[in-house]
Length: 607
Image 1 (cartoon, rainbow, N blue to C red):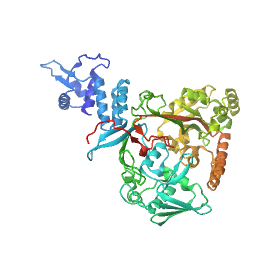
Image 2: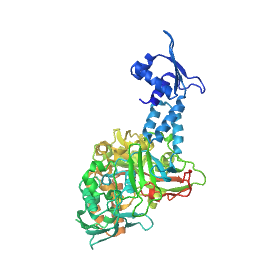
Image 3: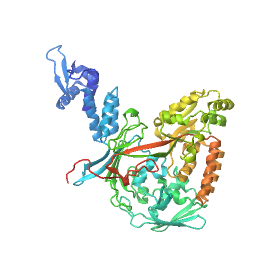
Image 4: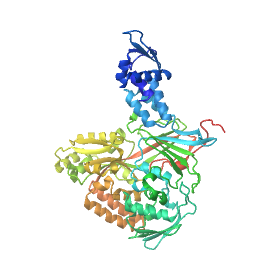
C-alpha cells in the first residue's frame, strides 16, 4: 500500500465524509488500533506514521503516560487530497489506476466530476518539450473508452483496432470513398490483371522502408498473404487465391482459383496490411507486443492505460504534420454524465449534446455505423419463428427511438441510402405485431439479449418495447469482444450491436463471410450457403451496377427472412477548435492523424 493510499485509508476510517470545510480534522487513536487497520506490526505502524509526517500529511501527537491516547491530526482534506492523487497518477500515464483509486475511496461522484473536468483540459492539441532533443513537439492527445483487442491485421474485427493498424501499417492499395470512389496506389504504384480477372500483378514502390529501416520487398507481401489465408479470422479476403509469388523483389503475382474483379478493392482492407516477414518469422509473440509496419506513425508504447505513436519522418507518402499522438484508454465504466467534453476537440461519441464555443467548426453527417439486432437461428427459441421476428420488427418505432435515445436516421439496411430514409420505409404497427405474435405461438419464453454496456440505453429501450406486447427480454451485458466471441454469440438468442461499414461492397462481404463473426454464425446453414454462391457471382462480375443488383438480392432475402432488425444509422457531430485543421471523419468513424495540423501555438515553448 502506497503512502497516499494509507492516508486515504485513515481518512475514510476516522474522518466523517460530510465534515464542514475548515473544521479541525483530528482523532484520538492508539498504535494497537492502527496495527489492526493496516494489518501489520506496531514497528511497521511507527514507520508508516513517520512517513506520513515526513510527507506533511499528518501531525502525530503521542499520548504521554499510561492510559493517555495519542492524537492524529490530518492536514489535507480528503476530497482535495484524493483529487490531487488522481491527477498525479494521470500525469504519469496511469489513468486506469487513477479511476480505480477514485472508485475505491469515493462514495459519490463529486471528486470524479472534478477529476473529469480537469482531465478535459489535458486532451486535444498541445506543444510539449521534446525529451530527446531541444525544442517542442506537436502532440495530439485523445481519450477512448475501450482498449484495442489486437493490432494484428489478420485478426481485426473492431473499427478502432482497424483504425490504429492503418496508422502503423500500409496496404498495397487504398480506397478513396470520394465522389469517384476509386482504388488508388499505396505500397503498389501500379497493378494489372489478365482478361478474366484470375491473375493479378502488383508493382511495388522502391525505397519504402519499415520502421526498423529494412526496405519492403515482394517477399513481405507473399509472407503476409499466405499468413492471412492460412490461419486468421479474415481469411475470407483471399478465399479465391490459389497462390501468391514474388516475380522479383518489387513485383508480386497473385493467381486465383476463380475470377475476382474486386480483389484490388479487397486488398484495401486494413486486414491486408503488409507485415515485415523477417521480424514476424523470428519471434511472432514478441513482435505483437510492439508491432512495426511502414505506416505514417510508429508504435512506441502500448499498455492498458496508454498508446503512444511517433511520426515516421521518412514516410513514403509524406511526413505527417503531427509529431506524436497519445491515445489515453479510459475505463468503459465511467458514467455517461462524467464523460469528456474536450476543450480543444469534442467528439460526440457518448451521445450527449455538447456545447462548443460559437467559433468552433462543426463536422456533421450520417456515420456509416448501423445499430441492429441479429437473430440467432442456430439455437432453439422463439426467434426461430419468422412470424415472431416480423412481429418484433413491427413494434419498433425507430423514430421514437431516435427521439428517446439515439441521434441519427432510421435504418432499414446496413448502409444509409436515400430511398430508405423516407418516412414510408418504416412501418410501425402494434396491432399487426400482436397478430403475428399470436401466429408464432410465443409462450412467454425469455429472450436472451447479449450486448455491451455501451449499448445499454438502446437495449433497455428495446426491452421496454418488447415488454409492451408481452415479450420478456433478459439483457446480458458482456465485454466489448462479444462480437468476436463465438461461444458468447452461440448462446445468445439475439445480439444488439453497432457495425461499421467503411468500404461499402467489401464491408458487406466481410459481414457475410467472416467466419468468427456473430452475423455469420447466426445465419442458418442454407442461408449461408446461398450467400456464398451469390458472393462468387459478385466477385466474377466486373460491372459495378450488376454487382449492386446482386448485393440487393442478398439484402432482400435477409429482409424477407427478418434475419436482422435494423435500428438506426448513428449521426455524428464533431466540434473542432479553429486552430486545429485537417480533421475529418474517415470511413471507420475516426480521425486520420496524418492529416491533422495546427495554425497557432497554444503554449509557449523555448526555442
